[in-house]
Image 1 (tube, helix red, strand yellow):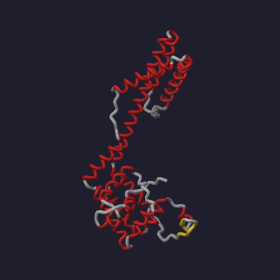
Image 2 (cartoon, helix red, strand yellow):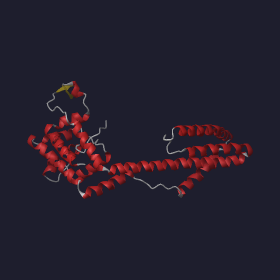
Image 3 (tube, one colour):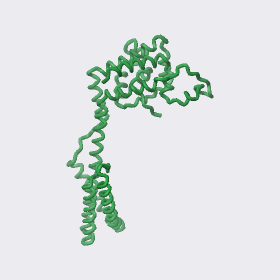
Image 4 (cartoon, one colour):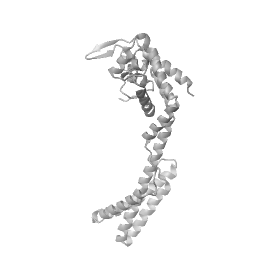
Length: 299
Protein backbone atom coordinates (compact mmCIF):
# COMPACT_ATOMS: atom_id res chain seq x y z
CA UNK A 1 0.00 0.00 0.00
CA UNK A 2 1.24 3.44 -0.87
CA UNK A 3 2.19 5.58 2.10
CA UNK A 4 2.89 9.25 2.44
CA UNK A 5 6.51 9.71 3.41
CA UNK A 6 9.01 12.53 3.76
CA UNK A 7 12.04 13.79 1.94
CA UNK A 8 13.83 12.16 4.84
CA UNK A 9 12.86 8.81 3.37
CA UNK A 10 15.50 9.52 0.78
CA UNK A 11 18.10 9.24 3.49
CA UNK A 12 17.14 5.61 3.83
CA UNK A 13 15.90 4.73 0.38
CA UNK A 14 19.14 5.90 -1.16
CA UNK A 15 20.88 3.36 0.99
CA UNK A 16 20.86 0.80 -1.75
CA UNK A 17 22.78 2.63 -4.47
CA UNK A 18 26.43 3.81 -5.31
CA UNK A 19 29.13 6.39 -4.38
CA UNK A 20 30.58 9.86 -4.44
CA UNK A 21 32.24 10.79 -1.14
CA UNK A 22 32.95 8.76 1.98
CA UNK A 23 29.38 9.35 3.12
CA UNK A 24 27.90 8.37 -0.22
CA UNK A 25 30.13 5.32 -0.34
CA UNK A 26 29.08 4.23 3.14
CA UNK A 27 25.40 4.52 2.27
CA UNK A 28 25.90 3.25 -1.26
CA UNK A 29 24.67 5.98 -3.61
CA UNK A 30 25.88 8.63 -6.06
CA UNK A 31 25.29 12.35 -6.18
CA UNK A 32 23.40 11.92 -9.47
CA UNK A 33 21.00 9.49 -7.83
CA UNK A 34 20.59 11.75 -4.82
CA UNK A 35 19.53 14.58 -7.15
CA UNK A 36 17.24 12.39 -9.22
CA UNK A 37 15.44 10.94 -6.22
CA UNK A 38 15.14 14.33 -4.53
CA UNK A 39 13.41 15.81 -7.59
CA UNK A 40 11.04 12.86 -7.86
CA UNK A 41 10.17 12.78 -4.18
CA UNK A 42 9.45 16.49 -3.84
CA UNK A 43 7.49 16.47 -7.10
CA UNK A 44 5.35 13.52 -6.03
CA UNK A 45 4.73 14.78 -2.49
CA UNK A 46 4.52 11.10 -1.64
CA UNK A 47 7.64 9.15 -0.93
CA UNK A 48 6.36 5.72 -1.74
CA UNK A 49 9.55 4.23 -3.12
CA UNK A 50 9.75 0.64 -1.79
CA UNK A 51 11.66 1.57 1.35
CA UNK A 52 10.51 -1.60 3.13
CA UNK A 53 13.04 -3.75 1.29
CA UNK A 54 15.67 -5.77 3.14
CA UNK A 55 18.32 -3.89 1.14
CA UNK A 56 17.34 -0.57 2.72
CA UNK A 57 17.11 -1.92 6.25
CA UNK A 58 20.45 -3.68 5.91
CA UNK A 59 22.08 -0.49 4.60
CA UNK A 60 20.99 1.38 7.73
CA UNK A 61 22.32 -1.38 9.95
CA UNK A 62 25.58 -2.23 8.24
CA UNK A 63 27.29 0.93 9.50
CA UNK A 64 29.01 0.82 12.87
CA UNK A 65 26.58 1.85 15.61
CA UNK A 66 28.54 4.97 16.48
CA UNK A 67 28.62 6.12 12.86
CA UNK A 68 24.99 5.67 11.85
CA UNK A 69 23.55 8.92 13.15
CA UNK A 70 26.35 11.10 11.80
CA UNK A 71 26.33 9.36 8.41
CA UNK A 72 22.60 9.83 7.97
CA UNK A 73 22.91 13.50 8.97
CA UNK A 74 25.74 13.93 6.45
CA UNK A 75 23.66 12.44 3.69
CA UNK A 76 20.83 14.75 4.69
CA UNK A 77 23.17 17.70 4.32
CA UNK A 78 24.01 16.62 0.77
CA UNK A 79 20.30 16.64 -0.06
CA UNK A 80 19.69 19.97 1.64
CA UNK A 81 22.71 21.60 -0.01
CA UNK A 82 21.35 20.55 -3.39
CA UNK A 83 17.81 21.81 -2.64
CA UNK A 84 19.17 25.16 -1.45
CA UNK A 85 21.41 25.61 -4.48
CA UNK A 86 20.44 27.78 -7.50
CA UNK A 87 20.76 24.69 -9.69
CA UNK A 88 17.96 22.90 -7.85
CA UNK A 89 15.35 25.53 -8.72
CA UNK A 90 16.30 25.25 -12.40
CA UNK A 91 16.26 21.46 -12.29
CA UNK A 92 13.05 21.24 -10.31
CA UNK A 93 11.06 23.72 -12.40
CA UNK A 94 12.08 21.85 -15.54
CA UNK A 95 11.04 18.58 -13.89
CA UNK A 96 7.70 20.02 -12.74
CA UNK A 97 6.90 21.45 -16.17
CA UNK A 98 7.74 18.19 -17.89
CA UNK A 99 5.41 16.40 -15.46
CA UNK A 100 2.57 18.85 -16.04
CA UNK A 101 2.78 18.66 -19.84
CA UNK A 102 0.44 21.61 -20.31
CA UNK A 103 -0.67 22.28 -23.89
CA UNK A 104 -2.06 25.71 -24.65
CA UNK A 105 -5.80 25.53 -25.22
CA UNK A 106 -6.83 26.23 -28.83
CA UNK A 107 -10.36 27.65 -29.03
CA UNK A 108 -10.43 28.47 -32.73
CA UNK A 109 -8.07 26.08 -34.44
CA UNK A 110 -8.60 23.69 -37.30
CA UNK A 111 -8.77 20.83 -34.83
CA UNK A 112 -12.25 21.82 -33.66
CA UNK A 113 -13.49 22.59 -37.16
CA UNK A 114 -12.42 19.15 -38.31
CA UNK A 115 -14.03 17.46 -35.31
CA UNK A 116 -17.27 19.37 -35.88
CA UNK A 117 -17.37 18.28 -39.52
CA UNK A 118 -16.79 14.68 -38.56
CA UNK A 119 -19.50 14.70 -35.89
CA UNK A 120 -22.04 16.19 -38.30
CA UNK A 121 -21.24 13.49 -40.85
CA UNK A 122 -21.61 10.74 -38.25
CA UNK A 123 -24.91 12.10 -36.94
CA UNK A 124 -26.36 12.50 -40.44
CA UNK A 125 -25.34 8.94 -41.24
CA UNK A 126 -26.96 7.64 -38.05
CA UNK A 127 -30.20 9.50 -38.77
CA UNK A 128 -30.53 7.75 -42.11
CA UNK A 129 -31.91 4.92 -39.99
CA UNK A 130 -35.60 5.78 -39.32
CA UNK A 131 -35.57 4.18 -35.87
CA UNK A 132 -32.55 6.23 -34.75
CA UNK A 133 -34.11 9.32 -36.31
CA UNK A 134 -37.22 8.83 -34.14
CA UNK A 135 -35.08 8.30 -31.02
CA UNK A 136 -33.31 11.61 -31.59
CA UNK A 137 -36.67 13.37 -32.00
CA UNK A 138 -38.01 11.90 -28.76
CA UNK A 139 -34.86 12.93 -26.90
CA UNK A 140 -35.65 16.60 -27.50
CA UNK A 141 -38.30 16.63 -24.79
CA UNK A 142 -35.84 15.08 -22.36
CA UNK A 143 -33.24 17.71 -23.27
CA UNK A 144 -35.70 20.52 -22.60
CA UNK A 145 -36.64 19.06 -19.22
CA UNK A 146 -33.01 18.47 -18.25
CA UNK A 147 -31.97 21.99 -19.24
CA UNK A 148 -34.82 23.52 -17.27
CA UNK A 149 -33.92 21.40 -14.25
CA UNK A 150 -30.25 22.45 -14.36
CA UNK A 151 -31.23 26.11 -14.73
CA UNK A 152 -33.42 25.87 -11.62
CA UNK A 153 -30.64 24.16 -9.68
CA UNK A 154 -28.15 26.88 -10.57
CA UNK A 155 -30.62 29.62 -9.73
CA UNK A 156 -31.07 28.09 -6.29
CA UNK A 157 -27.38 27.22 -5.84
CA UNK A 158 -25.40 29.67 -8.02
CA UNK A 159 -22.02 28.47 -6.70
CA UNK A 160 -22.64 24.80 -7.51
CA UNK A 161 -19.97 23.28 -9.75
CA UNK A 162 -21.51 22.06 -13.00
CA UNK A 163 -18.23 21.28 -14.69
CA UNK A 164 -17.84 24.84 -15.84
CA UNK A 165 -21.33 25.04 -17.38
CA UNK A 166 -23.46 28.07 -16.58
CA UNK A 167 -27.14 29.03 -16.72
CA UNK A 168 -26.38 30.56 -20.12
CA UNK A 169 -25.12 27.21 -21.41
CA UNK A 170 -28.20 25.32 -20.21
CA UNK A 171 -30.48 28.03 -21.55
CA UNK A 172 -28.92 27.60 -24.98
CA UNK A 173 -29.46 23.83 -24.77
CA UNK A 174 -33.12 24.44 -23.96
CA UNK A 175 -33.57 27.00 -26.74
CA UNK A 176 -31.87 24.72 -29.28
CA UNK A 177 -34.06 21.76 -28.35
CA UNK A 178 -37.23 23.84 -28.63
CA UNK A 179 -36.11 25.27 -31.99
CA UNK A 180 -35.47 21.76 -33.30
CA UNK A 181 -38.89 20.57 -32.12
CA UNK A 182 -40.52 23.41 -34.08
CA UNK A 183 -38.41 22.67 -37.16
CA UNK A 184 -39.30 18.96 -37.04
CA UNK A 185 -42.99 19.86 -37.18
CA UNK A 186 -42.39 21.96 -40.32
CA UNK A 187 -39.63 20.25 -42.32
CA UNK A 188 -38.23 16.84 -41.35
CA UNK A 189 -35.43 16.98 -43.93
CA UNK A 190 -34.24 20.39 -42.78
CA UNK A 191 -34.59 19.14 -39.20
CA UNK A 192 -32.15 16.27 -39.81
CA UNK A 193 -29.40 18.55 -41.07
CA UNK A 194 -29.96 21.20 -38.41
CA UNK A 195 -30.14 18.60 -35.65
CA UNK A 196 -26.74 17.22 -36.67
CA UNK A 197 -25.23 20.70 -36.68
CA UNK A 198 -26.71 21.71 -33.31
CA UNK A 199 -25.73 18.47 -31.57
CA UNK A 200 -22.23 18.59 -33.05
CA UNK A 201 -21.84 22.15 -31.79
CA UNK A 202 -23.05 21.13 -28.33
CA UNK A 203 -20.57 18.25 -28.20
CA UNK A 204 -17.74 20.50 -29.33
CA UNK A 205 -18.62 23.07 -26.66
CA UNK A 206 -18.59 20.33 -24.03
CA UNK A 207 -15.23 18.97 -25.20
CA UNK A 208 -13.73 22.45 -25.34
CA UNK A 209 -14.94 23.16 -21.80
CA UNK A 210 -13.46 19.87 -20.58
CA UNK A 211 -10.14 20.65 -22.22
CA UNK A 212 -10.07 24.14 -20.74
CA UNK A 213 -10.84 22.70 -17.30
CA UNK A 214 -8.12 20.09 -17.71
CA UNK A 215 -5.61 22.81 -18.58
CA UNK A 216 -6.70 24.85 -15.55
CA UNK A 217 -6.24 21.81 -13.31
CA UNK A 218 -2.80 21.13 -14.74
CA UNK A 219 -1.77 24.75 -14.23
CA UNK A 220 -2.96 24.59 -10.61
CA UNK A 221 -1.00 21.38 -10.05
CA UNK A 222 2.10 22.94 -11.57
CA UNK A 223 1.78 25.99 -9.34
CA UNK A 224 1.49 23.74 -6.28
CA UNK A 225 4.49 21.69 -7.38
CA UNK A 226 6.60 24.80 -7.87
CA UNK A 227 5.94 25.84 -4.28
CA UNK A 228 8.47 23.25 -3.21
CA UNK A 229 9.35 24.96 0.07
CA UNK A 230 5.83 24.29 1.34
CA UNK A 231 6.04 20.67 0.16
CA UNK A 232 9.33 20.18 2.00
CA UNK A 233 7.97 21.76 5.20
CA UNK A 234 4.91 19.52 5.16
CA UNK A 235 6.91 16.37 4.48
CA UNK A 236 9.52 17.13 7.14
CA UNK A 237 6.79 17.72 9.68
CA UNK A 238 5.03 14.51 8.73
CA UNK A 239 8.26 12.61 9.25
CA UNK A 240 8.88 14.14 12.67
CA UNK A 241 5.33 13.33 13.75
CA UNK A 242 5.43 9.77 12.44
CA UNK A 243 8.84 8.96 13.94
CA UNK A 244 8.33 10.63 17.32
CA UNK A 245 7.26 7.63 19.38
CA UNK A 246 9.05 4.59 18.02
CA UNK A 247 9.92 1.99 20.67
CA UNK A 248 13.30 0.75 19.51
CA UNK A 249 13.36 -1.71 22.41
CA UNK A 250 10.25 -3.49 21.20
CA UNK A 251 10.57 -7.28 21.13
CA UNK A 252 9.91 -9.51 18.13
CA UNK A 253 8.88 -13.16 18.07
CA UNK A 254 8.77 -15.68 15.25
CA UNK A 255 5.31 -16.45 13.93
CA UNK A 256 5.45 -18.93 11.10
CA UNK A 257 7.90 -17.61 8.52
CA UNK A 258 7.80 -14.00 9.73
CA UNK A 259 8.74 -11.92 12.74
CA UNK A 260 5.99 -10.06 14.58
CA UNK A 261 5.94 -7.72 17.55
CA UNK A 262 5.22 -9.27 20.93
CA UNK A 263 3.12 -6.20 21.75
CA UNK A 264 -0.04 -6.46 19.58
CA UNK A 265 -0.39 -2.66 19.60
CA UNK A 266 2.96 -2.41 17.83
CA UNK A 267 1.96 -5.06 15.31
CA UNK A 268 -1.02 -2.87 14.33
CA UNK A 269 1.21 0.18 13.71
CA UNK A 270 1.47 1.48 10.16
CA UNK A 271 4.30 0.66 7.80
CA UNK A 272 6.17 3.91 8.45
CA UNK A 273 6.48 3.18 12.20
CA UNK A 274 7.69 -0.35 11.52
CA UNK A 275 10.18 0.90 8.95
CA UNK A 276 11.70 3.36 11.41
CA UNK A 277 11.93 0.60 14.01
CA UNK A 278 13.83 -1.63 11.59
CA UNK A 279 16.18 1.18 10.57
CA UNK A 280 17.19 1.54 14.19
CA UNK A 281 17.47 4.27 16.79
CA UNK A 282 20.72 5.80 15.49
CA UNK A 283 19.65 6.16 11.86
CA UNK A 284 16.25 7.57 12.78
CA UNK A 285 17.83 9.91 15.33
CA UNK A 286 20.15 11.26 12.64
CA UNK A 287 17.24 11.77 10.26
CA UNK A 288 15.20 13.52 12.95
CA UNK A 289 18.03 15.91 13.83
CA UNK A 290 18.45 16.71 10.16
CA UNK A 291 14.68 17.28 9.75
CA UNK A 292 14.43 19.48 12.84
CA UNK A 293 17.36 21.64 11.77
CA UNK A 294 16.05 22.06 8.24
CA UNK A 295 12.48 22.71 9.31
CA UNK A 296 13.55 25.39 11.77
CA UNK A 297 15.21 27.32 8.93
CA UNK A 298 12.14 27.29 6.67
CA UNK A 299 9.68 30.14 6.93
